[in-house]
Length: 235
Length: 235
DNA sequence: ACCCCGTATCAAGATGGCGTTAAGAATCGC
DNA sequence: GCGATTCTTAACGCCATCTTGATACGGGGT
Image (tube, rainbow over all chains, first blue to last red; front, side, top):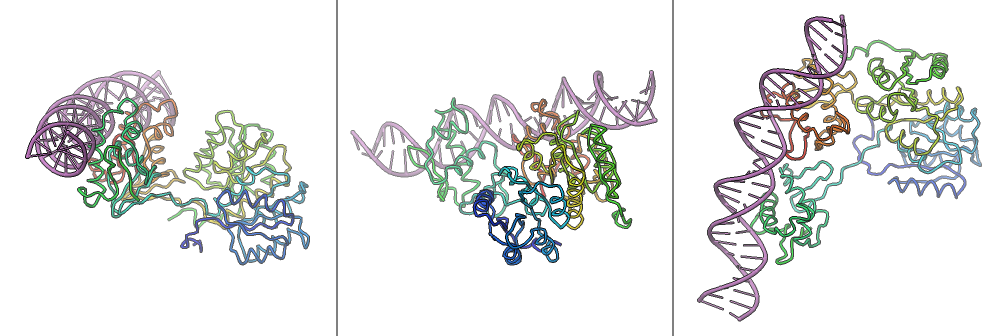
């Protein structure tokens, strides 16, 4: 079993071992833009310590370190850790690649490299290590949860069925939660520009949403009407 | 029980998908010198079949195939297999690398490449796949079990025969279990982009799946219809 | 008090989507 | 080529959803 299976970690943890501050910052910024938590080390010795203490999901390693060969670091690391290792190097000699990979490296990228390729290879390694998927974003107000990705709405934990128009209407409210949406705005987004005058539709369907989502439809606490203007979703 | 569990496989099995016979022989010789058992395919369609029947430990894939994009092959493969994929390509554009890796590829090697590097990367992929886990091979809901790797479906333990389209439809549902799939999404994935309007097909084939998989096809408990939107597989 | 406008709720009819079956066409394996 | 499987297409009844009209409520202005 995977020992990390139980503990939910939202952001992958990455350790960078790289002596040039410029490249370190460069790579750090890229990884953080992917949502990673990043720790740095500028020597091989420090790198091993960081790999031990931070329990990273990925190690990005430059071969050219001041205090030792990066290949030795990998060999050492592999005695006690299976963390994926992405090797960066200025040397493009095939023998270097073979040595680093056979020592236990998982991928080898030659400088200069592009950030998109680096990130794609990082994603590939994290995916295979089992840290690919993250949680779907769910929006909640009161007892109601809206899962936009699964197109599913629940109230008090139980699934609630919404018709297509009801769902579109709720989506608009959620997307602009807290803000007032005018009748015209809602009608245009849900029914299209030609139905902008049929404010009656809104009343019918808002009643439906309240009946399905509010605890007391007569005293709505979240789907509020701004009389003469429109509707608002209170958070 | 898993029939392959007892039989010790000493030699890794590799499938090569490559249309140029010269490179195919070249790569094959190299892999066999490493002690691999090698199977070949010269088209994308054939490659998928080989990947399904040979149960390889690694897939070596050339992107430039005569009958389809290799990236599509990876995406298809990833619906039912977690086998490591090493991509070979004549194109060194960064966007090609990113596309192939994000589709599910594990490594990307640009032609021309040296045999030592190829083999080192192969060893790295086999090493990691050997100790790590692959995809959970069987997906279950209610009385139904779907073995994506063996392309086999059973209900109450008994094998159920599905036609190709039925199986692809079910694959899509399983791959997005719990999520609502719109008519257009399903039609595009199963019949192709040109049949996006033929929603009737879906009704016919969903009826077929329900007849074969649901205990009471008239009251489906797992293959649910989201009226006006699409379908969803309930877990 | 009364009227008026905006709102809430209910219900019935219209519409189009959906499930099902079956028959002809196409494809595949032998 | 031939038989069998699979796919496409059409037809029909049913039902969820949408539309539309009717009715009631409530506050503000005259």
